[in-house]
Image (cartoon, rainbow, N blue to C red):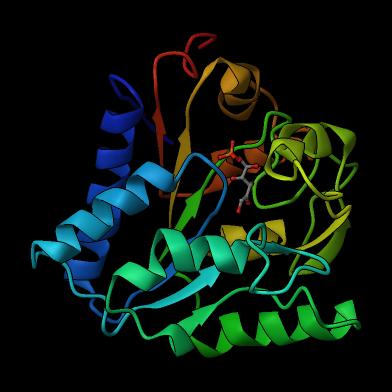
Length: 240
Ligand code: F6R
């Protein structure tokens, strides 16, 4: 694990965007594993800026997102498909048909998960996976549990995640289930970049890096990955 402490959120976002950008420049056909939530917004903004300057070309990039809420349509402004379109895909020259998000509308979740595993396999696996970190140590929507998870599955969100994300659902009930890549799917990415910011993440950051590798802190599994870069701001790093 390589730890990089950034000066602040903007510095962290730029640094993470630099690694993603280098990946796309070195391998124009790269498969990017992408995350949603508030943390990656700055990195996506930076990528859009570099694209507008002519420094980046997404024409041959494929993307697979970590997760999607169960029951939300791509048009719902709280769906992760909508988030990706508005924060990145609508602003760069990525081929939308090569951008994948689990299908939260498929009534048969097992079918949706199997289809998503097949997509990840057929694109040749993930070159670079971007991750945020839940306050409870989750990555994707892999919540603290008794065992590490495997491939894409339907998950019941924990109270901690419902509390952390309900701010995004002021006018409607937050979905209680999501479809998420499993821990094995994430660990198979060739390179992983995790970003975390703010004091609310400090304990999870500590457990991820200094704690035992345990499904009680799903992100701790990253200690076993050969190529992980972790970008933190000072607040998130304060318990290290
Ligand atoms: C999002 C995801 C989640 C978030 C995490 C942190 O696709 O998989 O693991 O990365 O919940 O969310 P924020 O960045 O909103 O604090």
